[in-house]
Length: 390
Image 1 (cartoon, rainbow, N blue to C red):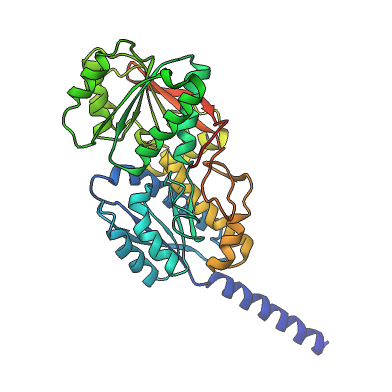
Image 2: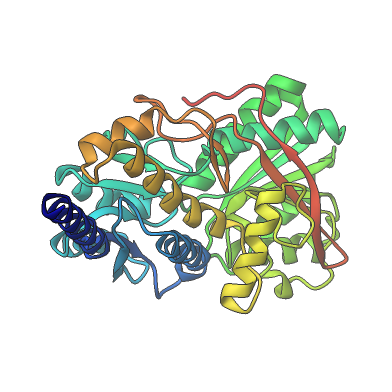
């Protein structure tokens, strides 16, 4: 009997010790090196909020591999070179993965540092260079390639809406807008021939006036059925105001760089406007998981998300947590191969696939939202049939 009692006592002590060890697992740190201030802040803000919501929900369920996630923050002040400083800062604090801004130009400086230090990095950048080919095997974008976005918009406009002539107005400031308009133009001409693209022009986001560009559109013998605007706030909304003031009421389309309606008040009564994004946060998205996410976001922050970028922030943390759990490790050399094995992995932003060669999405569906009379709403979900990544 004494022997049985000793065994029982030892077993109880072992169970108790195991419970204490599980509860006292060291926290794991995630770095967030983004624009907490400066002109890029509105773009990063909802991404950061989405990531923080994911961290809160994952921690409430026990964390990752028994460890609670802690955040090491660094403000790059909307200055891309500071991303490298930020990466070194959070790596020095023990970050096992780092989230960077949603643009290659902004995210790459820090991601290169993360790569050199064997740390996984995530971004919402839509340039395929944010990945294995442009930075290295530890860099992943949760976004959809800008080339795919341009192709989606061209196919939807030409085949679904029946618009047969287009004009490209490119904000020639950042990599994303250049790639978006470039891929749109290439796919549009494949669909309708060279003559279907009736013109193209450029401006800079900081330009106070695009009067010359507007005059050239108004002077065309054949007015375009649709204007493809590749820009972002504040230059994008300014361009739309000037187009409308000049009597150019054609549909205007744009990519996810003008996601959200935080800028819409600067273009009163906006109509015939269509934007590509990751999901509709206007309480009308047809994807139940996305709709539920936006409800939880509103409860958490006391206001609805002002852009679908919050889906990307949440999904960056979600993807890393899933991969770490499956790998049984926070080591990048073990987490990376699991990420590379993702095949239509269920993330809140949508089914996600990575391969060792391609760390960005090309076929995942995206959402079209519209503004009519100043009110935004869901239109449809689309994906591209033909994508050229070159």
